[in-house]
Every structure is written in structure tokens, then in C-alpha cells.
Length: 484
Image 1: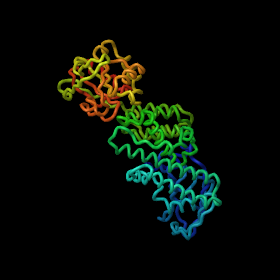
Image 2: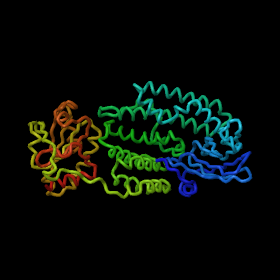
Image 3: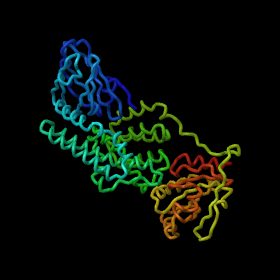
Image 4: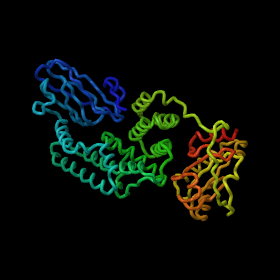
């Protein structure tokens, strides 16, 4: 999303983050047109534009700056980019009408002038690297996190050294904010490494970041909403919550994007607050609108609307998504008739709690919801309460026609049985020893758990990657199959 919007429409809405800034100057030569200003992107990627009147070769206006960043001026077909800091109060610029892009002929004043000069110097020297896109490329090429961490840490130190050399000419609060900004860039590089390597890897576990490298990051720091002015902090906030979601599941990968967003939402509403929470929710809704169910989008939007002073974010979400927020969830697809053939029957032999062997095929005649799990799997354990609640929502008739089968891939009976007792898992239990080399994982092509499958009454697989117990669609799927 990168909308071009007029500032007149947004100033009324975005007062939550807009900062008043006095912009003035003089234009020598043929000053015969107004000045066109494109402001820095706001927190959600919108670009603000305004035409500032020029009268008698000068202009003066209080404008609303949505966030720190590069402001673009256009006059007589010439462009000039100026870095504006949101907490500065004024900027003056004097230039020739035909030479706005001439460094020698442009003069700056106001408390933003020194800030612009410093950031321009940093950008000239390091700008090609101080980009999220560059970090993605580095993460892709890096063979290990240590090498990437050392490179980014050295870059961070070089920027801070440049900041310290210019410190006497800069506002103290800007110096502090910019140090934090570059530090968030460093932290972000670590999370980008984890994200890129996890996405590209075929193994079922995500790539962890050594805890010693992120010891300074916690929920308290993520709740410092004043830091949202830093684009690196904003990106880091999203990465941090998603990483914490994986951490809560022992870094086992989620089955799909819906599961990632749902768990990140759960964590955010428990641990974030204020504008950090509102930004996270709005950004997550907008970024995932096409690949999660509308019901989850509405759930997040409604929670966002219930937070204090959230009107700006709610309006952005509502205006941007429109019909998607009102849409129905994707229709449930199951094999309801013989005209919709299911996959071939897959059978496995399992050890029951009584020590006797039995086969999956012995459950023919019932719809089987199969849960492949292990005692050490955090994501598996977290779904069991939802599984119990799901069974509680079945009618007596449905309960007779639906069986919940739990296949553990633990290596020993003792830990398997202790976990069942500890977690109170109700249903038919089978053990397929051997972990990732077990008969169950081999026959069902499982490389990550939990994994769920649904069998119809004929013992054939109708969904080899079925919804989790916590997915509200699952009840309807099972009921439809049970009614056949």
C-alpha cells in the first residue's frame, strides 16, 4: 500500500501522529508558481501531498508532518529532498526558482537545518545499506548469523561515530532518538536473518536467534510508542511479535499464514498497549488482508476499535479494505459425494494405550479427525484445549459418528502416556515410535507437527492438511462429513 493522498483530507484524521511544523522560505528569480510538497510517508505507508502558496517570492505555512523522513519539494520542474525530523519546529529554505536542485544555491535555516545536513551526510555514506531491502539481501546471502551480526554491528558503530562527531550541532533529543533508530536497525537485522532463513528452510523448525544477541528487547521496550517514529522500530515491532509467536510454539513452524496471524494477534493483545498495539494491529490487518479469513480481520479490527483513541487506525483499515472486511470466510470444501473422489486409503499400525497393536483402518465407519503430535511439541499441546472444546460442541448424534484419533511420534511409551495424563487428552490414542522417521510421518508425508488429517467414513483422506482444532471452520467440516 502506497497511496498518494492530499494533506487536507488527512490532517483531520491523523492528528494522532501529525506534528505541527513551520515551513517557510524565499524564492529568487521568476517565482511564478506554487511550491509542491510531498511529505514523508506516515506510519501505514500513505504519502501526503500539499501545494503551498507562493506570494511575492516567499512562502510561510504551518504544516503537519506525519513522521520523520524525506520531504520532497518540486518547483519549476526541479526536485529537492529534505530530511525533516518530526519533533523539529521549523525549517526555512531560500533558493533560486530555476535551481532548487543546486547545492550551492540553496540555504537552510531553522532547528531542522542541522538535522537535515547530518542525515544527508549519513545517507550519502551509508544510505544504500540503511534499508530493510538491503537487510533482506544480506540475510539471504549470509551463511550464519554471527557473520551478519558483526557486519551490521560495525555499521551501526560507524553511524553512531558520525553522530557523535556532529552532536554539538544537533538537538539533544534528536541525538538520543537517532541512536535508538540505528540500534533498532541492528536488532532488525537479526530478526530478518531468522525470518529469511526460516522461510527458505525445509526443516520444520524456525531459525532461532541466540538469546544473548537480543537480551535488550522485551515487551516493555516494544511498548515505547514514542519510538514508532523510527521506521526500523516499526518493522522491528512486527518482527518481534511474530518471533515471539514462534517461540511460544518451541519454534515449530506454523501450518499457514492464518495460524501465524492468529497467534501473533493473541500475543499482541496480551502484551502490547497504546499506540504500539494499535500500530501492530492495523499494520498486520493491512499486510495480511488477502491471506487470512475475513472473520479474523474483523476480530482484529473490532479489538482495535475498542482501544482508546484508535480512530485514526480504524479509519485507515476500514477505508483501505472495504468489502474484504464484510466478506464471508472461504467456503468449506469437503468430499461430500462419490462424484468428489477422496484420496486413496492410507493405513498405519499403531500401539494402543493397552499395549496392543491396532490399525487406523479399524475406525472405518466413522469420520476420523487425526492429530499427529508429540509430548515435546509446544504447538501441539496448545491446541488440546481447543480440541476438547470442539468435542463439547458436537451433538450426541455427531459424537457417535466422529472419532478423534491422536497419534504420537514419541520414542518412548512412558513420556507418551505421562503427557496424555497430564494434558487430559480424550479420544483414541496410538503410538508410532521413531519421531520424524516413524511409520506415521512417512506414510502421511509429515515434516512438521502438529499435523491434522480428516478421513471420511470409508477410511479415505478428504483433507491431508486439515484445520487446527482452534479453527472455527473445523466444526462445520466434521458435521458435514458425519451427515453423509
